[in-house]
Image (cartoon, rainbow, N blue to C red):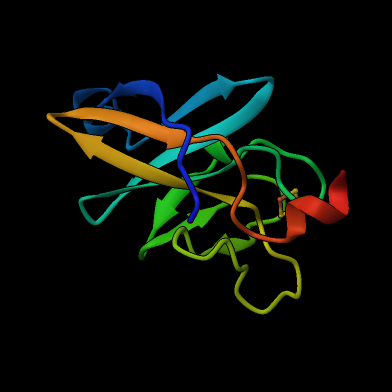
Length: 113
Ligand code: FES
């Protein structure tokens, strides 16, 4: 069984204004995104050319990178029409407080280590 290592990273009201927030947990830059009422966490540094996803936008349920407009599914980290996959993290929201487990749950991260 996996045991999560939850780290408090903010509150829901933090996200309702801009719908995205950059946090740093254990040296890892993680982007939080509020998409259709659900909070998702993706690595902030784009797998393509290292632009910051939190400087991008959210459109039609996708996180759009400001670099070359790749559209990432926030649930899986997969980019539409691309082979690359952005690492994602587990998120938990409790009483309006947002927690992230800073260990990436997608294999792409392993390749970048
Ligand atoms: S840097 Fe993100 S799409 Fe190119």
